[in-house]
Image (cartoon, rainbow, N blue to C red; front, side):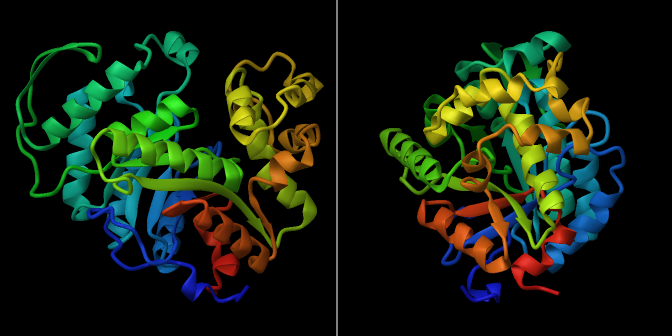
Length: 362
């Protein structure tokens, strides 16, 4: 594999608007992956992501230091071309008018570079914070409400997504409705994305074969809904660690894996999608450092502790579903995901300022 990535990365047409197929594989990356106490490094990471020619800059929203609206506004002022994506937020975490207002204000600031990634999350989280749980019906209707509000329409609604006697944004910029991208793992969520969304965000730690199966479900659902099979853009999230010492590689990749696999039901779903034996999760969850952990492990455990816990995972669960090693080895893995049907890879774990070597940019 050529160390120069000029044939690998598609940097043409940086705006998502058309959502058409790219001749080359597009790459994006996350700013501030994981748990962070300080949001300020995201600004330098955004600048570097654009310098590297990445297509999309993603933010995994987390209450406290990673509010998407605030950071999207900041990103808009230090970049000119790169798309800015929520990866992810949720319909019920903001009032529909507030979410649409956030999106369209950011569209005006960025000349239409926003992408709204939406997720379902787990029911127990919504119960804990006193917000309604997501259902397929509420998600579908919320997407319609969002788009109508962004177009400046008046919305009167009473249904699964709530009761809204009269909603309207007072003003909207001359900008398109941001694409809605649905984060999905299982077949029902993938089908929902194919039927009702502009894109689908696939979860980290899916193997190329799992991505191939997921793409087929999305494409088939789009066709069954009367849409073009390739009308839904597929974003495959890939955790990347290139050229790192073994200990640092384990921290970047293994630590992220633990935060996903340790969540009850979610870990099982991820293992099943990859065709792996869910019994292996018992060794992980019985680790002494995870005793009593109910929520996300990275909220209560240090980076070093997560690295220690990750040793309980089968090696295939990490190395078979991430891009590790030299730049050439990472490029080979990227190509496997492209062949599996991904339109764009979302590089995770490593921040944009760490991606220069693997992308062949100094």
